[in-house]
Image 1 (cartoon, rainbow, N blue to C red):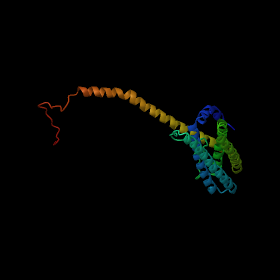
Image 2 (tube, rainbow, N blue to C red):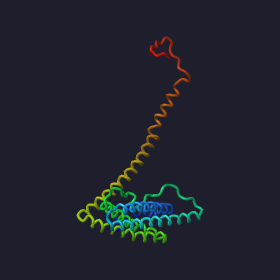
Image 3 (cartoon, rainbow, N blue to C red):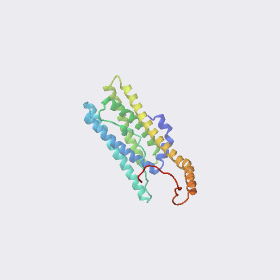
Image 4 (cartoon, helix red, strand yellow):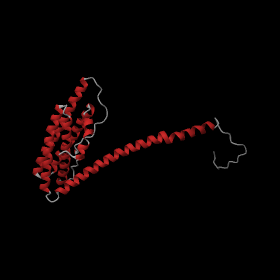
Length: 245
């Protein structure tokens, strides 16, 4: 279930979950993603014309909303522990969540495309939560939450695949590959935007500290050479600008 990328990034995940502040930020970020995803899937249950999918979407939405509550409550509990120690709380934005439901689009999407997206997202979440469950062995309460949610993620992954094969028996494999491609493309865009931001910041810093100082030095040198006050106009200068002033 664990993807090769999750295995490769395990040291990074271990560094994140091994520190208190990033752990709380992750839990709170997961809470927001799961809650938003639950609302979107609830909307999908209202739009689908398929009675079976309506029931499954509704059950899925309830699970996601419950996951959001679990993550938020655990994050709040950890924050109370930190406050009891009289330590300054962290600053900054939460780290990005790893579920993928933040990319979910409902309006105008056919069920087969939505099911393919859900299968790919839930499979990725199941693999990543498996890693997270191992990394929080020192926190039994958080580990128990991951174990509970992981069971739901496996069910979501399986039902979405089964229903996709039911409603699109000829193209369900292609729909899954398409969903994976879209997911990778969106990740590429996020990484590219982040790299562009870093590159722009570095470029501006180089311009400010390397290119700008010589021009500033030349401007100050020319300023010292100029005489103070007004510069007199030489006598006899024929100024025929034609201006009334």
